[in-house]
Image 1: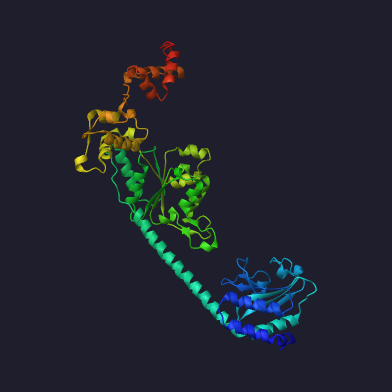
Image 2: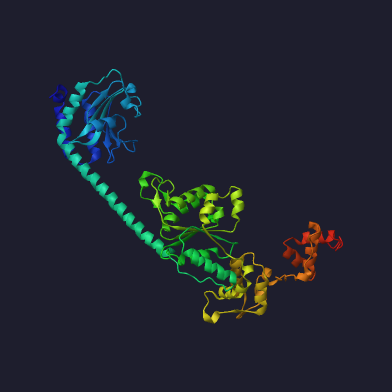
Length: 516
């Protein structure tokens, strides 16, 4: 027994007795740092507790608790060295000692560091510090402190057993929590699949153009490749994509759609590829992207021309590799999904302007379909109008179209295509009191529509020798004559303002300035 230990034997026995009576970690470490600060000549005694993952944190200083201290990574600094070697170490000039370089030592000049533990299991490190050059540590100090630690070996062993059990319980709790979340996520995936699984709906139409698109769609369904559906807005591109999915081998999988034009770049990236938690404390918080949710199914990307180039790069990489990373994710995931994209734009122009990647266009255009405009399938308008008019209505509320209303529908040019027709018919149902929808129940733009008949061969204007101005004049005059001199309808048909039409007619000498 060293002289210092013999001199303080009563205090050391008191410490051992206190430690044997508690399994409170904070009390345990505070009592040790307090006793050592009283016995060993030093300015400061600190204790760092070892965490389950091997990192350390300051929990006690001179018998006082320390909370929310900085985490020292496993293996870093003098604490990491002592824990790794399980040997004591001292330095009387820590500013020049490389083992202390990774720690913020502040005003510390010299330090003695010892491991706290037993049977190879370390529960902490003891740091006895001097703030003055007058106090230098030696091997005698190591011997003294080790003898004190030997006197409290039994309570240290008790704490080691307690912490081992605590760490094990925490680890098991985390594993159970992870399994529960995994199970919940699995259930969620099943629910997602159920919510996105669809039944095939008949595409309404008897025109040759619709018969052809249906025939081609059924052929495309049999080939499991990326597909592009083109056509004006409102022509039913998603309906065509749904038919391809429902007629394919993926029909039991999910059909999920996303509209690129309705999301910001950041939102679209997360929506498509998913997102992982921002820090390690939320390691199990993962948001699945639509690409993952559509695994073994089909992902329909609407208005893909609005997709930012950065996300285009990630999408082409996924199409080629069938692998992707979530936002902030470090590990890639696989997903077997068919991509069907749609657009109302001319891709050649977008590619030329650098707004759309050429390689992505070719990848999506392996198979392509083009939805016809409603004005090119006039024979389908009656069937579609009746469907939308009575959709979801009981048999006693079914309505029909008056001949005049049907003619207006067939004469109208439908810039909004089928979607516009649906809106017009839903409005007409509300406005009509009886069982017949009249022309007056239609929107003004539709009810005032006049069909411009095709010009026979005998009426074809010979324009090969005409200038552009002469051709424009002929066209305006012909349209005005056909519409009975109605300037408002003429301007609307020509796609110009009434004021512009009057200016044109005035320049032709067809009206007086005061009339314009």
